[in-house]
Image (cartoon, rainbow, N blue to C red; front, top):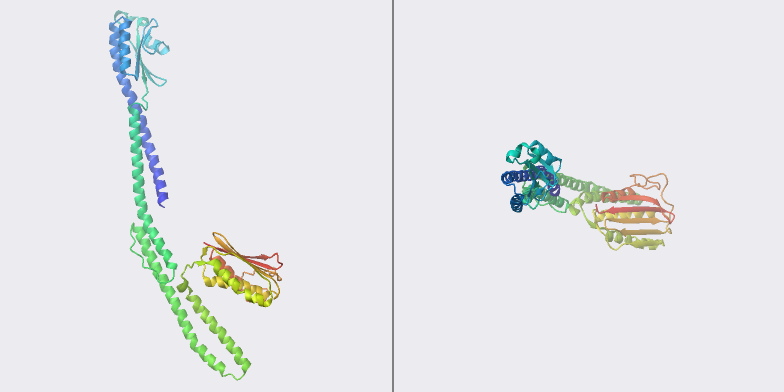
Length: 433
């Protein structure tokens, strides 16, 4: 945000400075040229006096040379009717002839500056235009080596100072917005960690940022209240169910039929396990935080090796290619273990005991890929195995749906297909974000 503000301010201030300083630079140059022309006009008057009083061209040449040496930016030349030129710019053109014939002074633009032409009246010969000398003064345009260069340098320094000053002010203003918002962001990052979050410190900055901080604080308090009530409700549910379950267990133990007693006891055990799982899931955020981070590769590798003894007991080929390390991913250890159990349980349940299994775990900088392949009959055609309740083998159809949800929660995905081993191929991608 601060960078965007600085770039926007720099662009806006630069356009304003250009719109202001460029015309000022042009005006400075114009004023400098006008000043030179004004000084040249005074020189013309002095030269006109000398020329009108002296017929000796040598005396005029001495004066003109001294004048040109004193003022290098203006070159004075006296053009006589006989074609003689005293000064650095001899030679006549149509403009000189016009000034001599009309008897009027004129100012013209020439290459590199301006030219002043002034006809000189010489007593009785004044009535004869053809006998009138013409004074030519060529005034050079002011360049960087003149006062114009100094003025332009001062204007550039002024513009640079204004630009830097405006950027400093904008940066201070942007910091007053960005730093409080950054502290709010850091505070919100701590909300997903286990335990009670630290209270939000007093938010400084503009009124809008303070209102945002107050709104976040109220929202966090509301979420904590809802989570607390949910946990209490689940705990109460578990506590309330224990008494009737215990009573049912006592009655089941009193059943005379051993087969019926064993079946009812198994149902009660399943009910008790379901209740415990509900309570455990409800308290997961309290244990792991709302945004858990796990070193995925060791957890997945450990859980895959956990199934190796079962494969060995069944005589099933069990090929493993597991990475040794990987990035931290946004998922919990329990979800990762459940993911591996779901994938391998499907293989062990729905394939023959001697069908081979291959598990590949590959790690990248931003993701981890777990691929489970088998040599069994493959997945049923025309059915999405990741849909909830979708099953082609008589199961509940929740296994791959749970695995797919775990992958999607981390920003990844679960894909299915055919393996080169002849059976099914299930690939799970877990991402860092």
